[in-house]
Amino acid sequence: MKSRILTIAALAVIVFSCATKKEVAKVVETAESVKVAEITPAVAGGQNLYDNNCGKCHKLFKATDFTKEDWKPILVRMQKKAHLDDTQMASISDYITSQL
Image 1 (cartoon, rainbow, N blue to C red):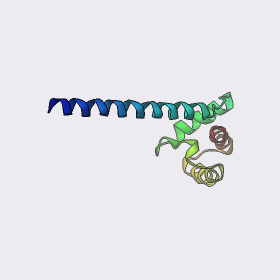
Image 2 (cartoon, rainbow, N blue to C red; image 1 turned 90 degrees about the horizontal axis):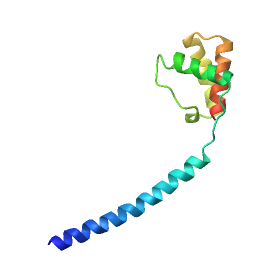
Image 3 (cartoon, one colour; image 1 turned 90 degrees about the vertical axis):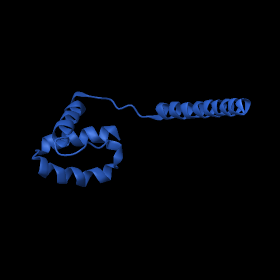
Image 4 (cartoon, rainbow, N blue to C red; image 1 turned 30 degrees about the vertical axis):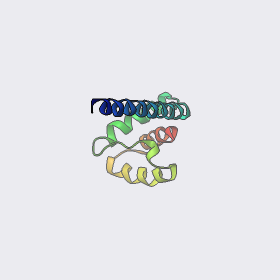
């Protein structure tokens, strides 16, 4: 009885360790393919506006949650609600598009 339990446990460890290595390889491949965005002062200003104004009322979405075309009407609609001027909105838009 004990030998069966030990055999099953040993097999489970082997299967688990093999699966973990595959998952780690996928994570490494994904991390290598991620685009690194350059943060300029203008983009940082847009990020600050996005974090502080948009985050007041709802959760902040990742830029990659929507396409560039999807973001345009969202930003227009939210500009009115957040009482942001065109310059502030342009900064936020630049920040979002730099993350795509």
